[in-house]
Amino acid sequence: MSKEIDELKRIAGGYKIWALQARKKYIDLRLNNETEIRNLYIRLINEISEKLKQEGTSQIRQRQLEILAEILIEQQNKLEGQLVIIFKKYVKANAKAATGYAKAIDISAVRKANVSKLTISKVTDLHYQANLRAIETCWARSEKGLYLSDRIWSKSKKYRKEINEIIQDAVAEGQDCVKTAKMLEKYVKTGAETLAKDYPGMMKRMKGRVPDDLCYEALRLARTEMTSAYGEATIQSAMVSPSCDSVKFILSGSHPHYDKCDHICGVDTYGLGIGVYPVDKAPSYPFHPNCLCITLTVNEDPEDFVDKLKRWDRNPGSEPGLESWYQNVYKKSSMYINK
Ligand SMILES: [Zn+2]
Image (tube, rainbow, N blue to C red; front, side, top):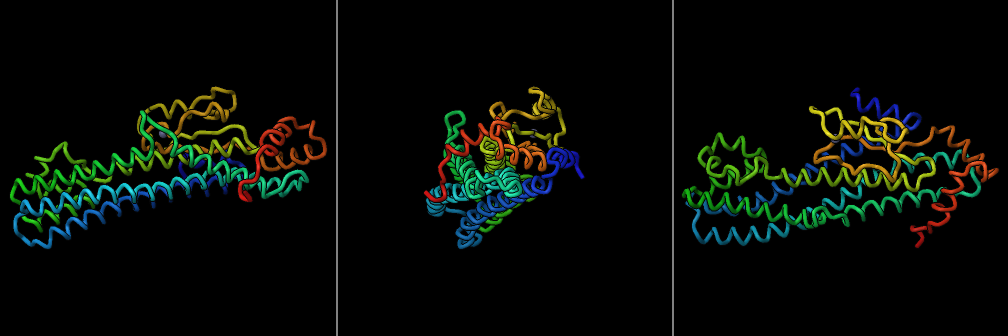
């Protein structure tokens, strides 16, 4: 078992099954998301290559170039629309996976403590609302003046530009249609490096103008945004959870060099433990693109928390932390589901 998973289990303690489930969900979502994005690009390229193949082994002519340019404009819009759909689906799923952890903890404790003042449906609703806020935050956050939707748009624009360049090059070289079609199909599936073997001249000319992997930037954006959605939902659920007031960051095992992740995950700035931060002091996460460091809420031990709930139920003044949560979070929140 890897070191980071051991640490995850240690921090989650009695909740480790849920913590592992949430982590697994995150990893599965990441893989599925990447497959969906790559398949989307493959479908678009197949559309272009089918069009090219209709012309057989003749050279690409000006007329076809114009048709292809038009298809590429349509494809840019299609790509943008489809990417937005995929991103929406996975931002939502990641937020749900992240809030699921603290939600499961709170529901289980409230059920066990059988506290008269709290209802399961309202505790569920608090986490549901945290989930919605996390999703909203992802789409509303801007980076260097660009929203997520703008960044998706720029990836679709790049796709059109790059494929256009490749086709223009094929025309300039008098390359035939079938060969160009096959080249594009191979490029989207296996990347520029493997292409260089079969089409050495072309890759040399295109160097720097096309990426090694046509989907790389979209995949990188997806990884960053999905991790960010997961992190945001972790923070949001910590804010509504009575069993938690801090979040923990665990260094990913796939970190070859010392970087800021080592620092953030390795210091105990607030005296709460290594890599543990009060909710309102949590660093912005992920720490860099492709970062695989883990985040989770730090929740009170299951039995302690149930006892605490029971004590508070008998005498609210005995647990000022819980009473403050009850007055300021629980009571102030109105049910969303029944709205
Ligand atoms: Zn990292």
